[in-house]
Length: 333
Image (tube, helix red, strand yellow):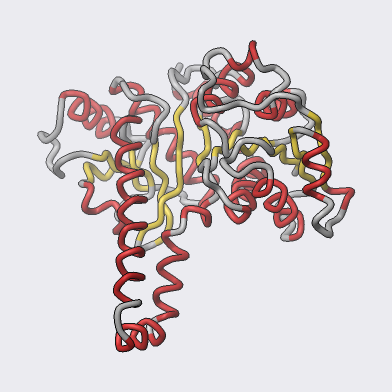
């Protein structure tokens, strides 16, 4: 597998991208990495490391996408940006997937414009992995589509089911609809219409509504919601996890008894921290497109980039895109 990394996407670029690429090839997550960005800066950064030079190649790009850039204009106005050139590498068949920790809207816009949607898919979505008590689940959409129709959410459920099958090898992934109550009568008109569609669509293992309090229990393998709800939910959980660990650190520093207790419980603390650490999950996949783009946090470190490469490579190997095309051509006739 060959993976392109937008080397100037993250907040601290290009260090996380460069080190993440080196870690990825050392752990054999892919065969080769193309680092796309300013050649001079990337060469200087790579000189700090020992690595197999045959497995990392620099593709020069003179422009950088910023948070101020309009996502809808970047493909035309910044053709020589690290993001657009990375995605074009996949379009041209040089790489199998792209990783970027840049502006999510820009990654989505550039990917959509370059790859195009899978036939019969109305809107692409952002699907992310989410840790639970019983393993990982997939949540979509988490930000691409603020306003959705019930048909959009039904398609997200189909895409999420395919993703779970080909990434986590779940033969019959359990699909749930995020709502304010478990009863089918709960929620707004959009959610109630979507519930009916999901309940009547027998090709999906729909288990009903799920409330926010049950998200981390591992009840479902795929959680479906619109991008507004999904994005708020994701950032709330991330913020809550960060706050809990910060409070724990403050309490541990207060007296020696707390420090002793922390020392004894360190293995549990370390396990919990690792399980809730977003860098362990790499990034979110843009689903519904004719190509593979994985988006990581802007604050990604090298571990996050490494794991994003792993996600991208695993998806490329699984044949997820080809199966998605076949499925939607057959099911949406």
